[in-house]
Length: 123
Length: 292
Ligand code: SF4
Ligand code: SF4
Image 1 (cartoon, rainbow over the protein chains, first blue to last red):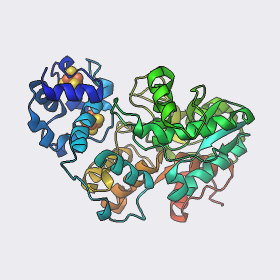
Image 2: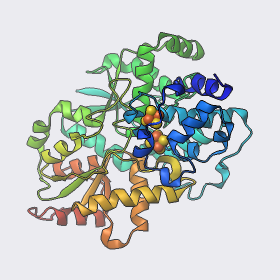
Image 3: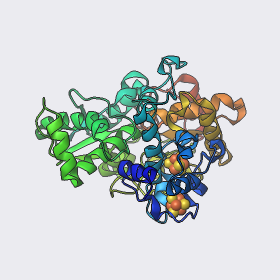
Image 4: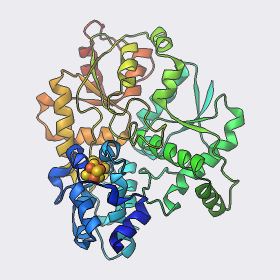
């Protein structure tokens, strides 16, 4: 098993090798038009140990809506795999995706939006 | 009936009308929602990293504090009105019920509180209202919202994921609980295919373009089905859909309100609706005299 897949499996608890690339996850995902690769393509890169997946926008566009998780015929929690890709970058601390000091309209935004963005994008 | 209530941050800081109408509607139905003393933020999104418990601790602390009050209550439940709070508290509780190791880790980590014993249930306010009974609610209606076309927007957190069992409050692909509730107050539910889709979640903070893309589709779909108003169970969904409304031209906007605000209107308690929204809703109630 390649190192990347090992790490993703450790964090997400999902056996990425169970994915047979049917594309159901990407078909249901409502955010693909903002992504640079499709969710199933991200999984294919993990299976191959291709670390370029960590530089893609896709995991950061994923909004954890769990449509893919509900529909995957292999029972994979695809949302958790996306989270694992984010976590790997966050834990390496080699990367700043957002600057919480630059939030516009902070008084207007619901508090849960700010907490959620801090939870998903920072350490 | 007395039951513990978890209000959550956004009801306290941004949307007091959601909290007030939840409490007052329940009181009208003979249910007293008692706020958990010393609750903390739930964390908003259930952390999907299975190798760490850190991000679950806020939810666990609230559940520990809820448990201290349980003996004074009539049900061993914690009720949340916000869908995101519901989802996180529910998932953390289910995880601790199923995973003894995680429960031990969490309990040894939280040193200043008694151990958590996962013998309580987390329920959403909609489920509590269903337990009260939609016929019972119907019998308490003083102002039926006859003719008002209501699109029930569920979003993600009430319905997904499906596993572990118990998270969805209804059929995850085709829920009807909110429509049934709307029917009980005399309104006319309209079905629309985007009711379980995602509003864009926290992307509103740094990528409002993503939220606008989602919100326009959701509102456009409700509009094309003839909705006068959209009801929501989530402060973030409501905020995001309203952002979408701002980006749309006036004639295709659909106001978004909390489901409890329509209940309040029908049950004759303060709905805390903005004047112009209330006016629009009462105009939608074709058979109701618009007196306030
Ligand atoms: S739906 Fe499941 S099996 Fe199909 S491509 Fe996506 S992850 Fe792989
Ligand atoms: S959880 Fe992420 S990848 Fe899956 S459908 Fe939702 S946005 Fe797309």
